[in-house]
Image 1: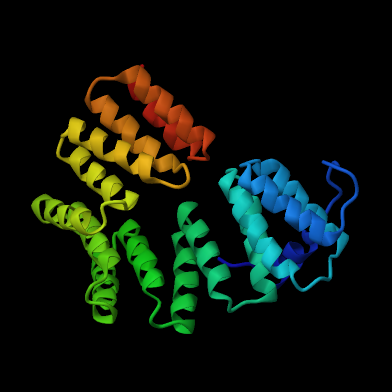
Image 2: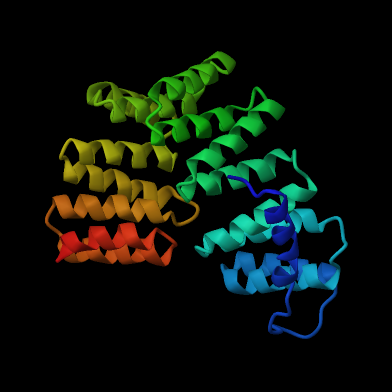
Length: 283
């Protein structure tokens, strides 16, 4: 559940922790300079330094209204480092200050879903769609969430609503492909993925989704080709893609390369317990 009143007080009190003194990474900077420095570190993929720079900006001007957005940025940086609990705290602070901001709601909903907290993810997506009833992305993400919750009827309704809003929606079709896959309608799923590949040849989600389908049908070679393409096309490294690739390699009896991919996924923030279970198959 979302924090009660006492929980919210503790959450707000935790701002003091987030704004605690960080080790200096350069000489004293102004608020704007710390923010600019955080962007530079992000561009260099130095996430730990970007996090420290943002914390120093927040500490230097704790009452600046821009901090609402900085906390959201901080949450995303923490999330990319696998610090999900800290990221959740940062996102929630942003929402206490700007509770109806769609970007903030979507970020926290996605994180809740990633953490397996489906109930709170659903609450956030419901709130988002109350605010923006024609938000296709929100319908898509909620539809995927319903799939995780095994609520196939609600999932189908959300993807169908996307088609009503936009009959050409490729992501609605991607959602239906995932639904077909889970329901065991493999031929329909593959037909949909093939259509999507023709329409969106540079979309990594299409190749990753079809790779999962090929895993289910025991086609390790095709799964490996698709997930390699997904990894090549991705702008950022996705830990789950490496899990898919490890499963493809296991199907092909390539245990050592599979183990390397699992370790890579862990480094990128994938759930350690799940990864270690998969590692057992590489022995």
